[in-house]
Image 1 (tube, rainbow, N blue to C red):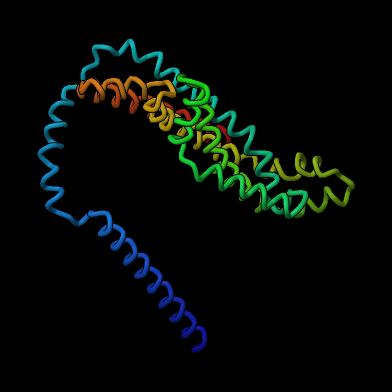
Image 2 (cartoon, rainbow, N blue to C red):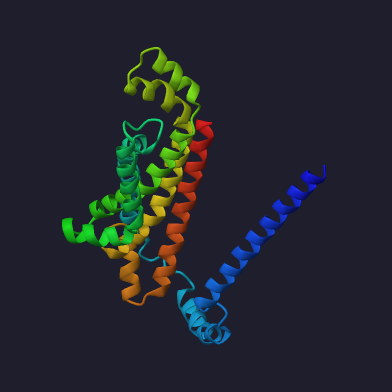
Length: 261
């Protein structure tokens, strides 16, 4: 009994020490970024108030010209998500220990996933705009390439933690590697993969609006044009339009997740 109490006390002290270390690191990071500089906040407050006054009331006079860019942004998010799934699923199967054909293939697949994740989509958007020109295509490519690293990682983790018994039974019955994957692995993880995909689609809509700023089409292009012309009342109207669309997309995503449960 005393040994159990002593072990519980040590575990509690380790937890408290870890929490204190995390808190100290967070405070140091905030201090390093100037978060505790009250004078800087005080100097910036008048400019922020001035900007806010110029954004109110929002100017929706050009709302009809924003409909197509909003639809382009939606199309970019759907196309980017579809391309992400097409690339991520095979990569995840190669990056999961229980489905990869060889440990070397696993390491290569995981390195590729890390490489895709390491480059922000905004940088990829600039690269693809330079490569294929302005429009929605560079946005789709940027979204898909960056998200493949993240989605494939989530897919691989879901596949890695499937119940091993169906895989062993299928292998013992003489099933091929492809048959094991299609009949023993994917049926177990499809709900999780669907959840990950829907969440990523919701993210893609928001990211698509940002990618338009670098010339990748969509509503972000209109937002950047309003910023350059210092039309802050139009900026606020566009942001409210994007917010409304984000709420609709999030609602559709939640409805799809309920249907898949």
